Length: 507
Image 1 (cartoon, one colour):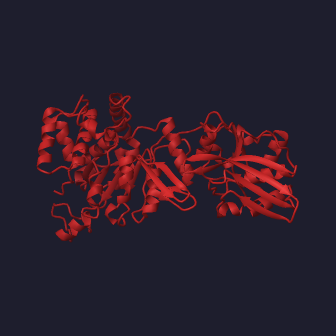
Image 2 (cartoon, helix red, strand yellow):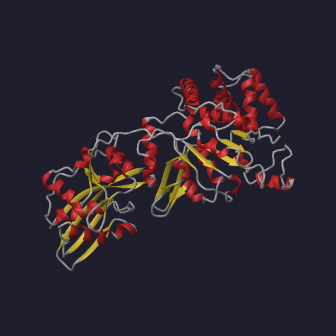
């Protein structure tokens, strides 16, 4: 009885499970049975594989074909199983030998002419395969860039089913494996020096980058809120090798790796439209669980412009990721956890018409309209925002000045220096940035000076600070101290942090 065995990978979030694909061809009425909890895309593989085999010079067996994907309890989805199923059918028919494939996986979608198309999720699949002892992977040539930098696994890129036949029968490796796929860092096209004036907002931006503090810009339209937010990744430290791979894995699962680059060290910048849904923000799906915007922004910046215009519940869905740094999505097939440690930046107009600033400008909104507009940002969410900065319209002198502000490179060097101080201070404690200092440690080991703590206790007594706000101010004070080169926060750092924490002044 002809029987073939091939291996592949089934992804659930960023974790992959080895799938044993067994193909049996037996006598009986011609038919095709696919076992192992396949989804609709996988059930359609029959017609794709049939046409691909015939157009590649192979044959489709006119017998009873049974394809089993084990383990049977694991849900399988997507078209990435086309290639291993086609390989199993050819092996079972004796068209290609059953070589030693115990440590080889195959991934790829087949076109009707036999060409192999790129799929999403190859990078996390290869990382999971490496953990399971796989040493060789046959993948689409279009996904070869994702394999760069992964040591310990040999990747073979193919463009057509005939390439797979030549590799298994003759050991011929396509030339794609020999390409010089060296990584080139992406050029940064925006710079902080392009922002005119806005010294307070630039300072707030720098402190946010130093400590990983969440930020709210409030100001009239056209004052540069979006420009400031877009330049935050340029002042943040570059991602480490492991962080870059983790970010690339998330983007690979989401199918957005092409626009970013598989080994970019630049922190990601994700800016969903304010009409986005809660599912698109945090992730979800039925058969295939896709990461949302907050996971795509892992290690970088999640920017939401016109934040008060978001639908009810969309921004509040970010409250749990802001606290835990991850998103857990539960479905019938299981629970998937995506990392979501991002810096949240919100931008809002001061009123519905956008012209209120307390300086006599022609605002047509009533005080009730202004209050209701800003109340669309819920209290629990605002309590998680560390810095609130008002972005004023630049003056005529600032616009006419030829003196540029500090560049992103200069600010980034200060940010890196401050983060190195924080990392050395927190060495061995389980966190590396000030925004992650646990509350118990702030009350004990990482207290501010006596005068600074007395100031905070006074604000608590007058109910101008919540318990969360108390700890947020202390974390901000540590970031200001690191920027200023101070060993620990004093009264001036605590007062400065408190001013950054308070609602933006409209005067």
